[in-house]
Every structure is written in structure tokens, then in C-alpha cells.
Image 1 (cartoon, rainbow, N blue to C red):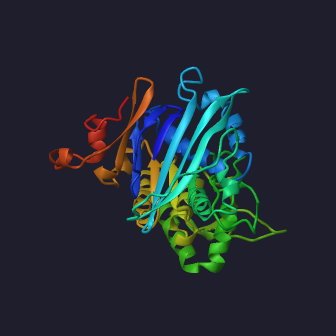
Image 2 (tube, one colour; image 1 turned 90 degrees about the vertical axis):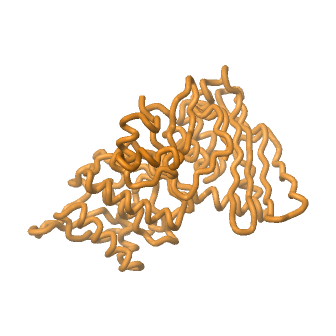
Image 3 (cartoon, one colour; image 1 turned 60 degrees about the vertical axis):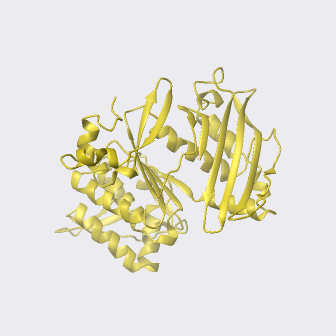
Length: 361
């Protein structure tokens, strides 16, 4: 993937995320902006007029362009998605326009079959539109349909909001249970479906939570008027507890374990997690790290973290150090060979703390 002109990402050239990518770096280095790019892409391709809505919610186009519209006039993107038969490519340029908005200056896509002597030309969708034409092209064009389907399966999960108004603390429609939402708002319906349709998977979730929450016995999910709320039972008590009584860390643990232990067919193709360690006990962080490694055998995973404990769950080549060089973010994947001697005596987290690998303020 290549991204230019998006927030602090002045120029990210031909970056390959890999099966598992762990972003580390100081506050403000650009980790969240990298994830924010995928959130914008997801919004843009989830329905017509969603891109202008996203731009407005971000404070206008000037807030998205690198150093504002006076410095950067456009965002350029090219994404290549490879499989066993070839490569799907999608590229676009978003140009700054009147009203602090973004319009497409260019949008194109194509499929390159492996070993094809004459590469297929780009399919151009024109310019001047404010929502991706890929959405309408997908109705009649197989390549556009495949690309849209792939990109729609890149999901950013962030469980930061566990306040008393957080959606995961409230009731939710029992029928909305196919995919776990980005903020785990439908955690109760998802667990209810797993309990019924995937009992072995459900039991693995319960068993994992009993490791992290020793008092936890099982969920108590009782639909009422087609709604269900997250409830559970605890050891040595006959009470049923609801999500309103859960601590922030407990809610995040439930959301993460459910996400990572659900059936593989329910997982997104690319799973993105922003700071999954927030509010978790050190032991829980290690367990989550192991679950992330296991999930990465099935789907592509990208996480951003500030946790020294969490990065010790991964290998050097899976770590990408994000730093600010002047006004722009840089992304550098660690190489194992230069660190071989260091790793005989120190862990990855210790090398990070000593600034051997960079990523420090």
C-alpha cells in the first residue's frame, strides 16, 4: 500500500503490512493516523455519502490533509491485494475542494492475473464525485465487486469507550449478531448466537475469561422483547450482574476475548486493533497477546500498542517502529539480524525502553 498526504502520513511508500504487524512508537508519532486511514476507507466503502460524512466528523478536509490544505492539496492512495491467482489494485486521489471538502480527482481499479503477458489496463471511474464510484461499479463489474468485498472486510476495532453511556453496556437487538461491531456494541447478541450455534467456541470464550476473571462463572443472556443485555454470574453468589456494573477493564477483556475466539468465518479478513492493552492486568495482556498470535494464523492482523508487555509476545520482524521526522511519520520494520546479539541478553521491550530500536519520545 502507498498513502500520501493523509494526516501525519506525508508519504508511506509500498508498505507491506505482513500477516501480523505491531505498530509501536511515541504518542503522536502516527500510529493512530495509520489506523485512522483504514477507518476512513471503511467508512467510504460502507455506503454512499459516507465519505463526506466522515470528512465532516473529522473537522473538514483541512484536518485530514497533511499539515492542512495550504501544504497538501490531495490524498493519494494505491492498495494492492494479492491472492493465489493474482493482484487486485485500487487507487484514488482525493483533492481539496470548496467548503473544506474532498472530491475524487481520480479513481481506478484493475486485476492483474499472475503470469499474464499483457497487464490489464486500469478501469477509470472519472473525477468530481464525492463518494467512491467503486460502490456503483460493483453492481456490474466483477473486479470492482471483489475489491469492494475485500476492502469491506478490513475492520478497525477499538474498545476505548467503556463509560456508563457506552453502547456495549446497553440493550441490543438480538438479530444484530452476524459481526461484532467496532465498539462491541452488540456483544450480548453475538455471545447469544455463539452460545446457540457454536457451543464449543462459546465454551472457549468462557474458559478464557475464567482465566482473566477468576470470579466469573458464565454469561446469563436472556432476551426480552427482542433485546438482550450483557449479564453474567459469579462464583459464590446467586445474583445476576449486568454490564452497568462491570469495570472498564472487565468490559474490554470480554470484548477482546469474544472478538479473538469467535469462529474464523466471522472474523474480518484484516483485523485492526488500536491499543488492545488499555485497562488490562499484565497477565491478561499476555493472554491477549497469545490470542492475537493465534488469530494471525488465519487472518491478517494489525495492532497499535504502547505496551512493553504486549510487544514481548511478538517477533522482531512483526514490529514496525513509527516515529515523527519533522512534520511527517516514518514507518520502519525491525530487522532481526542486527538485533541478534542484543536479544541474547534483552527482551524486545527492554530494547524499546533503551531506545535501541527507536520509537521513543
